[in-house]
Length: 355
Image 1: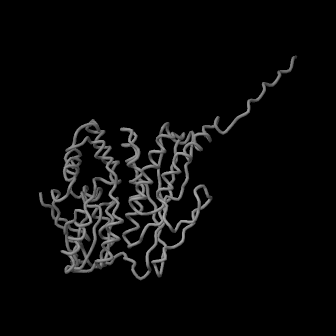
Image 2: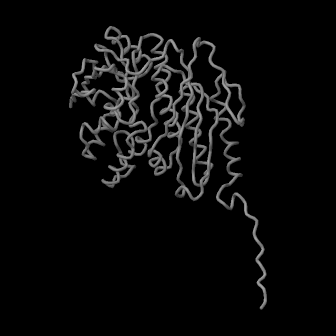
């Protein structure tokens, strides 16, 4: 019997396993200018370090660090369908910094996590370009992150995003939770659209009705309007709280009005809201989703921001000044309600709709 001669084993590489180092180096080289453009004076580490180093702003006497993390959910699927990727980078920053600003904190630095089946340098660079733009709008430094290839773990051309933000606030000036007092006025700040919440329901409605993302809704097609980036409120809120005593701030994200507004109310109080969709710039978009999906009012205000991205609580005497300042800052703002005493079995949020 003749013994079988073993075949010569081929040398395997990381690229054979689905991870291309060359693409990763090309990507890093391409995004360095975007990162440099966001650098704050407090940052003392270099691009490419194992870490990010930041001094605390000298203007803050009693600094407290604040952290937030978030993603953009299935809005990514809309970006993939119409092949536009830079706006979801802005969304990623916005979702964290808009949470962070609710305590009055100033964003310092941002880190991102991008995971994909196989790195597409063009797509990833667009996303980082958007993240860089979001950081510039928020006044924070993009200080790195993680770009991971997971071959075999993701469907082809799929990816996910997460972001992490560090900010700082003076301990004596922290805007706390459950701080909106009875008799205070609730002011809504206009959103730029759906922001980054409710997209699983939006996509369900589109799929059920076999709608095209090229269909016009108002002055633009549906796809582009859905990808309108989340409004970043950092600059306007930081300027406002220097001039007005703001009791509490709610970021209207997942859970809509019904879950986010109670987080700022004093216990044993409720928000009594009078709401007119037509008061807000993107009312046609919210009317479209409600009509096409046959969505009940309660579900709308439990899922979407319905045109209001932030709600702030101020003393009644400061209402007019607050509205004037926000309008001067370029933000559409309206009084939407008041804080009232709540009986034992009453809901924390009551909404009266004007059609």
